Length: 230
Image (tube, rainbow, N blue to C red; front, side, top):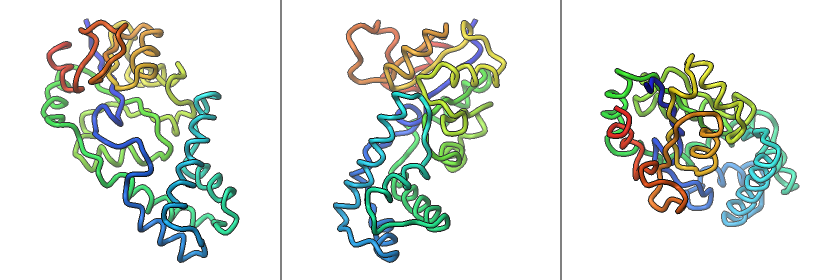
């Protein structure tokens, strides 16, 4: 009998844009200009995104997570007129996160669903992220942290999904067995395939799932777990 449900966070419990080019980054751009940078807004957005994407590709090959500090260092190395001291780096990261997170919202009826689920299941989160306070901070902001017994992030753990150790870390913290656990997320490889390799049941949140996934393994939104697990 299932006693544990583990969720992905971004794209599963909250709506967000994975892109780093569509948000309004006027504050962080102005900060760079005030500290000597001469690049235009468009140059900034493109260069920052390219530095980030390079690290993401490397991370998915090595399965070693990188931090926002690493991204700032890579960005600074690409742009000689943007050297950042430790304090400036921290200030820039905080401005960037405010802008990147501005449109993040919990999915509809999430609080109601988690309240019901938490009364009968151990709930956890496993999320790839590059800043330790980000996911717990957003959960606290949305009033959802109280529902979860553990939140395991890749930057804290050191290994991103789909490395098996991050799922095992969550199971260990929850004192749960894989065969009695369910994973719900929006990434085919990270949230559907990888958990199944470890013996968990898994469900994919997707509007256009791969053809090889049984229809009963697909949710249009994460709250549908209520109708499929309870």
